[in-house]
Length: 86
Image (cartoon, rainbow, N blue to C red; front, side, top):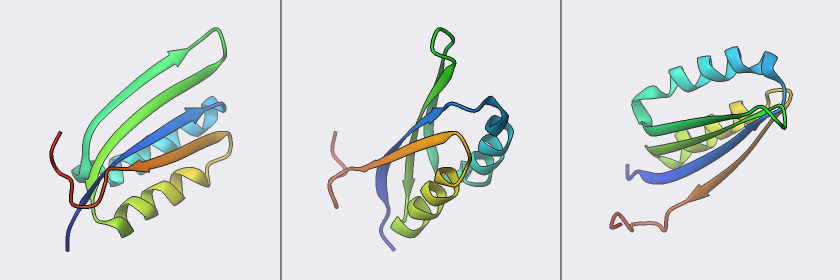
């Protein structure tokens, strides 16, 4: 099955969710191309960007699990289907 590239943007407002969030990301680590996290201390949040290359169902499952965490907001953006060029 074909894979897609997606960017998952995460804002963590509840620091207690961090341990579970990292555990979920570890479960999907074989699909993660890159990850960048920035603590924004002045606002009391952390902002994380995850680049993932996986099948649609895997991306949806990961997004769903992350979205269920209390105090965590996520948005997922997909590259155009079949567009692997940069």
